[in-house]
Image (tube, rainbow, N blue to C red; front, side, top):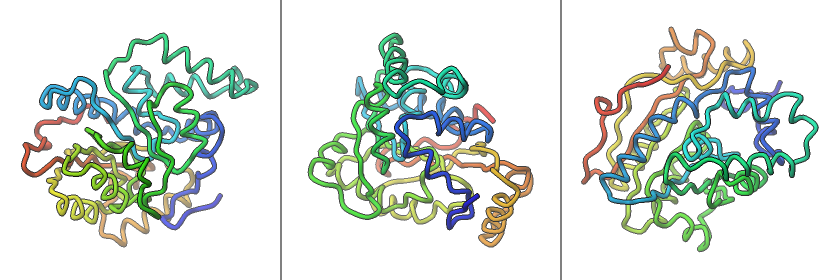
Length: 283
């Protein structure tokens, strides 16, 4: 079992396969659930944006979108349990990518979108993006590493007009550099943001960068399970890192799960949704 520089087990291989079967097969025993935890919060923010800004079909940029999981949950009202059932087990194990895609296209055709929303995915994995786009989960994709380089003119055009920016777990690997480049592609517009960030990663540098771009950030009360630790060694490495940073792990990571917190950022000249307005809905 390999570990990355943060102490977490390296799961890079599950994000670069031609379809999501490896992704869900590896994460299923770990109880990975953060997209399901995030779903009601994202759905509420999308609706609030649509109603308050009078935008019929908001454009959502999902950073670190992988196979379009958040889009599938929000556009077609799927659940993580449903997706695990679709991709894990013998029924799909022997299928070709084309057969699996046909199965997923049927989902996107047969269900009327639960949310009138346009999803753009940003990721460094071209294979994951390709699958999500072909399946109909994402409406557009941007294959780029904005940590390393500025977006191209075409990518800036794809980012332009974004209404909301979301993520579920990539911040910490993705930094304020990526968010700044996404915001700068908007010109004078400032999209709303909602990021679920693991407690092991400090959010302060991101918050400071966003403040410099005209944002006010608040944290929603509560903690959100992401997944179980893959091993006792992973737990030990992560807990050592968190303790060194002064983070109290008692009752949370010490019990065997990675936990995230939700940060909401909006233009400072507008009304920001605070913790009292978005009550915690799930464990």
